[in-house]
Amino acid sequence: MRRKLVLFTIDLGLTTLSAIAALFFRFGFDIAAMSRFVFPTCVGIPIYTISYIINGIYRIIWAYADERDMFILLRAVALGYLSHVVLFYFWSAFVLPRSVGAMMAMGSFVMIVGSRLFWIWFVRHRKFSSARGKRILIVGAGEGGVILLEDFMNRPELGKVVGFVDDSPRKIGRTIRGVPVYGPISAIMEFVDSLEIDEIIIAIPSASSEEMKRILSYIDRRKVRVKTLPKLYELMSKRSAASLLREVSIQDLLGREEIKIDIPSIAEYIKGKKIMVTGAGGSIGSEICRQIARFSPNELILLGRGENSIYQIHEELREMYPELRVHSVIGDITNPARLNEIFEEYKPEIVFHAAAHKHVHLMEKNPSEAFWVNAHGTKMVADMCCRFGVKRMILISTDKAVKPVSFMGVSKRLAEMYVKALAQTECVTRFSIVRFGNVLGSRGSVIPKFQRQIERGGPVTVTDHRMKRFFMSISEAVALVIQAGAFEDSGSLYVLDMGELISIDKLAREMIVLAGYEPDKDIKIVYTGIRPGEKLVEELYADNERLLPTAHPKIYRVDSQERWSVEELTSLIYACINMSRRRKYTEMVNLLKKFIPDMRVKS
Image (cartoon, rainbow, N blue to C red):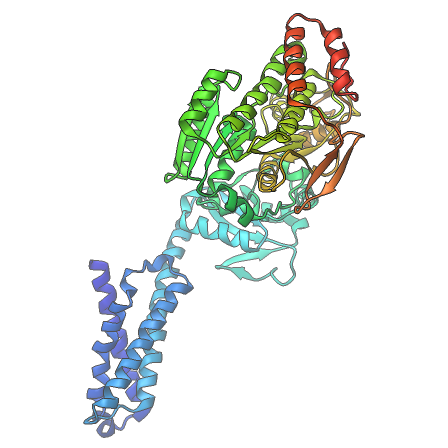
C-alpha cells in the first residue's frame, strides 16, 4: 500500500507539472492570459489521477514492466485526456484550449513513462552492478542470448554477463541492455583472456551440429567452462532459460535439427484422454510421459516394474504439472492377472507400450527373458487393449528387429508381427508400431558408458572401428513417436528418419575431444571385438519392406507383404519361450526361420 501511495503521489506531481508546462508553452510569460485558463487546466489533474487508478497502473510491478504495461499507461492517459476534453465541451462556462489539453496529456505520458523507465533502469542496474561471482560471455546476440541476459540481470547471484560475442557485423560494436557485443566468434579466446571470463554460454538454440562444432573449435575448454541452451521447444517450459543451461554434450554435435510436429493433430487425440505408458520409468517411457503431459491429458497412468524409477518420474511430473492427475502403478506386463486388474481400474483410452528388455548382450545370455518380456509381454498388453476397448496402442520397436542377429532383435520382431496380426482382427483398438535406432542418453546407450570411461581417464572401449549406428536424441524420437500415434491407419509399422549412420569410433573420439582431451594420447581407445548378437551396421527396414511417405517428412510407413495369424504367432511365441528355457536353441532357430527368413541368429 505504501508503494502505491508513493507512486500515486509521484504521478500526481508529474501530472500537475505537465499542466503547468502546458500553460507555459501556450502563453509564455503572459500571466494575465494564463490565469484565465488555470482552473479548467487544473480540473484535469484529478480526472487524470482517477483514470490512472481505474486502469490499474498501480497494480503493475514496474521493475518487470514490458510493452503491455506501457500500453496500459498510455490507455490511462488517453482516457484522462478524452474525459477532460468532453467535460469542457459540455461545461461551456469555461474554455479549455485544445493545445493546452493535448500538451498536458503528452507531457503527463512522457514524464510518467520516464519515471517508470528510470525505475526499471535503476533496479536492473543496481542488481547487475552488484552481481559477483563468475563472469559470463554469451555466444549469440540473438533472441536466446537476450532472454538469457534478462535472466541473469534478474538473478545476479548466478553471475554477471560481461559481453556477447557474435559474427554479425550489424551487431558487433553495439550494446544490448548496456552489455557490449564483441566479435567475431573466431576471436573468442582473446575476449576470454581480456575480460577474465569464467564461463561461456552458447545461446543459439537453433544451431546445427556443424555450427556447434565450429564454435567449440575456437574455445579452449581447459581454460574456460562451456554451457549451452537447449533446443527451442525445450525453452517452451515454465522454467527460466538460466535454469535450463547444461554442459555441452555429444548430442549437440551429432545433430540439432529442430523436429517440427503437428501440434493440433497430437492435441486432438491426447487432450482430455486417459493415457497409459508402460515402462514409464525408463528413458524412453519417462520422456513419453513428459511430452504427453504438455498436451493436457485427463489422466496419466505410469506403469512400471521398478518402484524407484516410477517414483522419480511421478515426482517430476507432479512438480511441473501440478494440475495433472498422475497415477503411479507398479506391475509386471507379463502378469495377466495384474494387468487385467490395472486395465479394469484405470480404463486407459491410449496406451504407449515402451516396456521392454533392450540390452542385446544380456538377452543373448538370457533369451527366455527376451521372449517372455518383449514378445509375450507385448502380446499381454495388446490383448488387454482389445479386451477393454482401448482406442489406440503405440508399440515402441527397434532397428534390431530388422534382419535380427540377436534374440533381443527376434523378440521385438515377434512383438511387431503379433501387433500387426491383431490389427487385422475385429479388435477395436487402432494399433501403431514405431521402429527406430539408438537414442542418445538412454540407459542402454553407449554414450553414458563412454562418459564414465572418460571420467576415469580411460581407456574407452569400442567393439570394432567399423561399427556404425543410427542415433537420435530421446526427445526427438519421442516427439515423432507421439506424432505417429496421430495417424489413422491401424496395424501400420512406421520407421523414423534417423539421419546418417554414425561411426562409433568417431563418436568416442569426439567425446574425448569434447571433454578437453586428445584421443590416443591423453585417453586411449581399445578395440574389444564384436559381442554375440551385435551387427557392424544396423538397418531400419528389411529387403522385403518398402518405405512409403506419410504426412510427416521424418516418418515413413513400412509396406510389407508379411501375413501371419494371431493363432500362429501365439503358438510361436510360447514355443520360443519353452525351447529357450530348455536351451533347445537349434530347434528354436529352425522354427523361427520359417516365420522370419531374414534372421541371422546363430544356433
